[in-house]
Amino acid sequence: EIVMTQFPATLSVSPGERATLSCRASQSVVGNLAWYQQKPGQAPRLLIYDASTRATGIPARFSGSGSGTEFTLTISSLQSEDFAVYYCQQYNNWPTFGQGTKLEIK
Amino acid sequence: QLQLQESGPGLVRPSETLSLTCTVSGGSISSTTYYWGWIRQPPGKGLEWIGSVYYSGTTFYNPSLKSRVTISVDTSKNQFSLKLSSVTAADTAVYYCAYGRSLPPHFDSWGQGTLVTVSS
Image: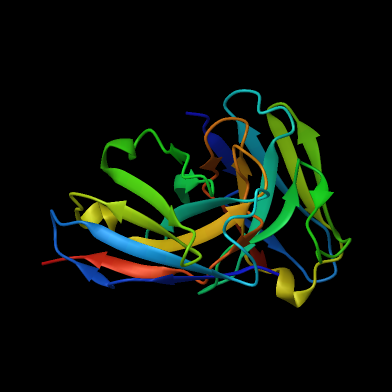
């Protein structure tokens, strides 16, 4: 099993600022990495796949980078609707998810 | 765009079998493009992939659940289903169905989810 570790567990950022979320894999997943956003009571929504490709309809303020074992999701200029929990997921092997980063308003 | 909707009992007794169905609308489950999957999320916790199925019936399961899981597809009803046997309280979760275009999958879109509680 490939273990995905996200950090920090909670990130406090002010609206309009940049948020940087990290995800580390226990072994290389090449570029087979996705990011999801989940708001309370809702299903996860795909933001990024293949480490850096935005899903359909995702605003340009969301960007992904990284390869191998280290990945980053960056949200530039945070909007009120961006405060949520974010999960990374690898699909180089059978899928596993990180434990999530809660992005909260500072 | 494809839409997915989970259905099934919200309460299951311990040791029994959990059964859920996902109905696909806005497209055909027989599409060669998509893989159909189940993911669960215990209350207040993270996400766990259960397994996926292709329209042909080919299945892929999480090794940690494989002995208890069956996923099947019914092309005549445009549905796919999940059966999880010998459930315990640890199987209490929101169960989501979803689809993706890759294998192993990432998940392009998800159903709204359904809470299944295991309790006597």
